[in-house]
Length: 268
Image (cartoon, rainbow, N blue to C red):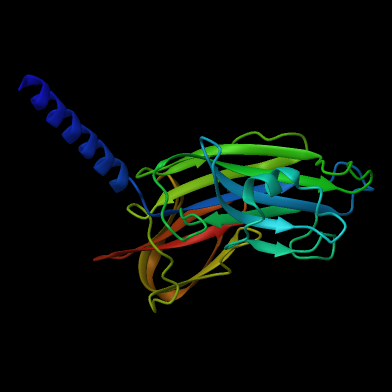
């Protein structure tokens, strides 16, 4: 009898544990930005891939993949991990100085927390991988020049990371913002409009109908801009956020009886 009772209790504990794991699937958005500079003046072309993996190395989703017909062997790690799955990915040919995005410079991807089947993955530690190969000299067959990865935690709490990258990588930010604490962009709301959004230089215009103060907070809730308006009214206000790092921010309009938030992406 005692053995049977122990078995029943053990099974119940397993079921509870599994139930908790199933529930731990927080909606949200990861925004990942980085700037890659050319290693030499002769490196004018670049192929690259950015993808998400779990902490145990399971492939989750490709977010970016650029290569040409003669450079498909220079992203070997991505090919091996992804089976070349491109669901929700930005794709195209080898990047140059005249393409968009360019071969080098700032890059941004966002991830909604789902896998290639559109299913929300469990909370936990995930990794963003970046693989890159540039010309002059071209790497050997089935080789890349650079592969690096950055970890973050997907969960109910916001996670803001500004890690240091390898040589020729800078401006790296990872912002996981759970939907429980974030506010969807409401630029279609007649009370607020932010443009341009995303901002490529940090200078934005805010069109509003009623506000006594304008504030901007980062993804972990810190106020990084605060301005009181002398005469609450409607209008268009230009603010300079160019000194802030790339990433997700929230513009807050405060009036006497309400507060409106709208999401802003800086991608300089």
